[in-house]
Image (tube, rainbow, N blue to C red):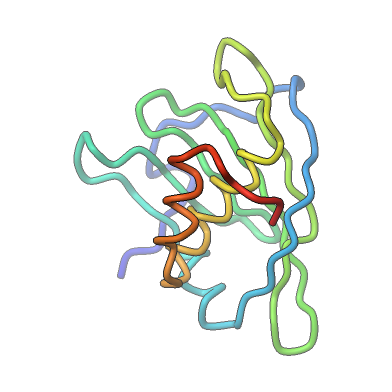
Length: 133
């Protein structure tokens, strides 16, 4: 598996118009390894470019290169937890302003990379019933 690096795709820095949200998640080391391997888009339908530069995981929209999420992780015992999350709030780059939906979307993206079952989270997100995570 090829590990994604920043220079594998066009990226823009997280704008100053950003905010912090709380997302409480814990991952096993092997799940974290899958997350940090990242994602390099291979076709037009691939919407995200994801890469890791310790201690941050960056999640960019593939078509624009805009940084939507920036997530810092910390080791806790034999697991890894989300310690800090920045979310883009530049209305010209990202129109969402709902912290709860952002937390839900980020959880879906990270959990799917970790190979966790995200079907219920996806249904809740699609129905607009995302819960605080």
